[in-house]
Each structure stands twice: as C-alpha cells, then as structure tokens.
Image 1: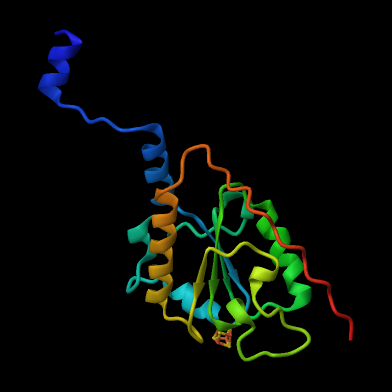
Image 2: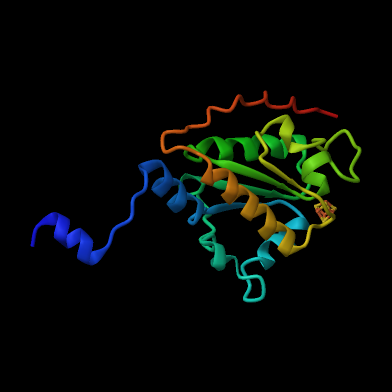
Length: 173
Ligand code: SF4
C-alpha cells in the first residue's frame, strides 16, 4: 500500500514541533517543593488522594533541582535563606517557572521585620503569586493550571532569559 493510501486508511493529524513540545512540557511539570514553613503543609496536601496533583502530571516532586522545572516557594523566606533558595533555583535547568505560595512568600506577610524578605520577587522571577495565609491546596492546583497555560504558549526554543534580580544583602544584627 502506498503512503497516500495508508494515510487515508489509518488517518493522520498535523501539528508543529512547538505545539508538541509545549504540550508535553506543560503536562509533565516536575515541582521543586521549596517548603520553608507553614504553607508547606498545604503544599504537601496537593499530593494526597483528595487533591491528587497527579491528574495534572505533576506528582513527581523532586528533591534535586536538576530534575525540576517549577519551584514552589512555600513559607517565610529570611534574608539568610534567600541565598539558599536562589542557589537551588540557579541549579534548575531552563526553562523554569516559580510560584510564590502564600502571603509571606509574596510580600513578607505578617512579618514586617528586619530578617524577612518582603517578597521573593526581590531575588527570583515569580510567575504566579498565590494569595492566602495559607492558600488552600486547590488554590495551588489553580496556580499550576495557570503555569500550564503559560507553558502552552511557549515555543520549543524559548529559553526565557529572564533578568534575575540581585540577591538581597544579608543583614547582620
Ligand atoms: S502565609 Fe501564613 S501559613 Fe503561609 S508561611 Fe506565612 S504565616 Fe505561614
């Protein structure tokens, strides 16, 4: 059977490399669970049977940054800790995304104090800010869906080259 006849009998679809790669990327986002304080408990809950993050292809939480493409920062980040978080982020391969989970991570929250970074966007390029103290697990799933939508619009060779903010100065008191 010739190719034309075989295509007619089996059927075929057309797509682009960009669309196929974006589709596979967005359905296999592997999170780096950067759980620092209480918000991390809600982050862990997304993996339980009730919320079941596996439905979105993101159940593979990795504890090595080299296998992750989404950093979920959950908790209060101090200036000293910010250098650790940034170091882990720098070790993740491109392209990569960041969710700031909760009030503390996004703005410092209730901690208006010398030791706490008033928002991780001072040292990381944040894609999604998640409100709440703490946000519910379903809010985190919603943020993941928004990240997936963003990824769906990327092209295969998009390496984001986001300008990175300077690391905050550690304050010695
Ligand atoms: S936002 Fe609330 S729950 Fe989350 S780390 Fe801050 S104090 Fe804890």
